[in-house]
Picture 1 (cartoon, one colour):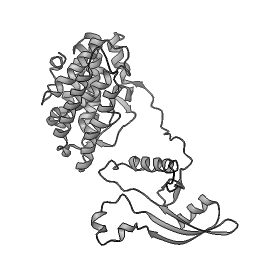
Picture 2 (cartoon, rainbow, N blue to C red):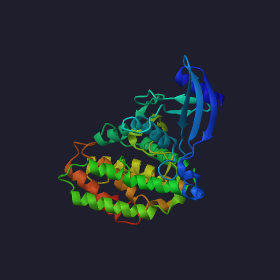
Picture 3 (cartoon, rainbow, N blue to C red):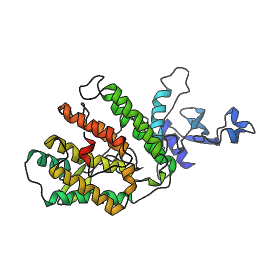
Picture 4 (tube, one colour):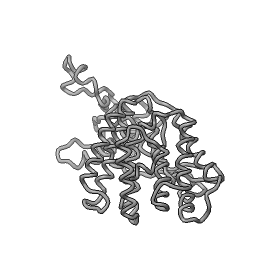
Length: 364
């Protein structure tokens, strides 16, 4: 109670005497069937009655609400924070809506903190010293240096890292279903990317994008039953998010879209770039990039024993193909290279088992 009192005094800038704190019941909650009908609540609002002395005693009542985690997109702390932050601003722009007075959070010490004056949020991180892994691939592409043992060792290190983080499993079927649903429908994933493509392009038609979306929806239904695969993930494990310091020592950046997900997300995010750089250099999977692709896959499969992943990667490859073929992210990519990337996506989606040693067959 002292934490609540301190918060109210800070908010209103005057001494406060709390009169009562009780659970707020709506009219429909008083019926005998309320427990059954409303058993799935999003949180239990508290009604706080208090007196505030600002040159005269004023009695006030406020409702303090939180959200609870559930399977409807509220599993993560950030989900719930995002909704409450939005409500604080949106409630007060709609005529006749009850006013929102503040938005904040409960700190670890039990105190209540306000963030009502926030305009934008920011994050502060340490600086990672070193060179992006993308620079390695770029140097191999341009011939700035020759392929060597260090390249193979780094591919092994990257695959080994994934095998280690993916070893941590989580039993939460609804969260796995959410992550597979987000792969297809999230603004940053498949549907968001297909919507970002121009209406007419020389390398893919709207009809083909529609068909690709349909196939990905079909894959969603295949994968949603594989909740035993839920594991710790990075979420955006590509060469620009890996900083090598020296030899095989590296740091990763920009973990994305949740702590838990499908291992295939990380595996495809990195491996698609070996194919991408190979297409830019050779027009096919060949040479050092083919070696890196195979070493990366073989190391991961050897360390994890996860052969099932070859029956799961298909829609994740489609997602990453939409990224690397994008006119927004790669505006100067030749049309024939984009076409091969879409051939790969379409052919992989049509295959129940990914043959990672036969990438060139998927490019045709």
